[in-house]
Length: 245
Image (cartoon, rainbow, N blue to C red):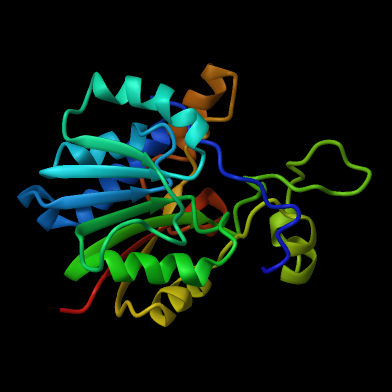
């Protein structure tokens, strides 16, 4: 998707979200070396609430986000919980670090928003040390609702069911963010130089439901477990890759 007139910057998920917990648990299954420390950069860190989960397992962590006006408030929240995490402004397509600076890079729900997704992925590859690991997530095309909304004509409500299932040309015309199939994100990672590519479907956390009793019921019966084999129950694709040594 090159025409980005409808695409909007991402909004951070509120603190305390089940989605953060699920994503972190799945990440830890794939990154056994994370327990050994090292350095980590979270690209598109937002309010830092997800970054904090990972910062506790590394020697030093950095959070990078494009929306610099909101970062001072986020910093104050983070400083209460992490003393090894630095938050700074920056662009994921021009990461302000030298080649091979980090053991780990995380990038959650960001690639779908950037102008040039290939450039952003190449930057992740560039700043990773040989053997380093990257953990990403992107929206899943087969989820029933368009998670980022769309600017559809004559429809003030932007989360129309099944809009994400439309042909790519139509979806990309009105969507506020890109959306992916597993094979599509795997291909992008391969084109960026990564060869060890693993993906999983994260179960929808149902955080958007305001009725807590219904939310609890659906989580217990339908949307239980961190991952799913059923595409219709997944709102997000989890990606784990390694840089060749």
